[in-house]
Image (cartoon, rainbow, N blue to C red):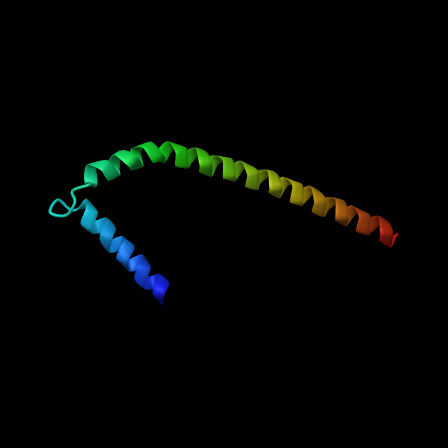
Length: 74
């Protein structure tokens, strides 16, 4: 419950900070988002590559175990 209240308070603070009658930080927020977007895209790309490599390894391991199971049955 405390976490939900904290989350709502953070969202409210963010909205207040971006409003013209609030802190008017909207231009700064957009500037940070423009700078963070390429870094976030690169990070997501690296994670996707690592997940793909792990998936290929898992498939190869599953095939290897299946082949071992077939040879053990014979």
